Length: 241
Image 1: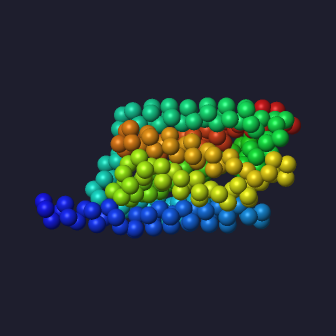
Image 2: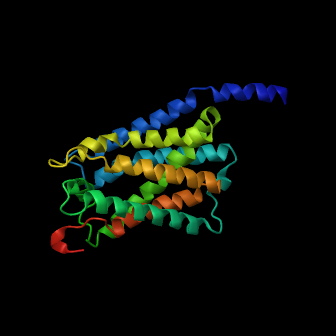
Image 3: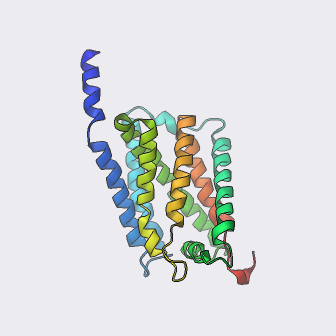
């Protein structure tokens, strides 16, 4: 026991978890920068630019969970869908309120939300169903990465609360390219996705801590992003919604 207790502090002070977390943030930021360039924005390559890195990071997260004997955290249980859907519903409601207050039609900042939805194509087209599934899949992989890989890696060094805050902060920083790439000529730099990751990140970090499992968090993120596309907050005025 004495030898084991002497080894643990070495892991707690290691810089490897912080390097992993910062590396994930840089990879995601680079994916946004590449995928949202004008010639790719809104196309299949734009989705793949995010999906492929997150698939690799999410796969690594599953391997880490397996090596630690924690794959049980991904096993579905009764109540997972209920709690995940409840948090997703609350976050969608909060997004609706923010839209109504700051980016609704006629507001100078409406351009922000228009820029976000233009990436997804016509919000009311039949094709949005496939887009909704695609962004939901990316959402699941995001949770595997940030709440399933980065946060647990940081906890031994920083503790649960600071690890969750740091993980959420890095996730938000990874979205910084969208501030400029989705900027609107009238409204200016676009903070919507960065703001969204801050609020949602803390909500999903709390859900992970409260449930002590990952499945409800994955379901919540997937349902939230699916709903944002299937029930768009903004739609072209000419189509009426």
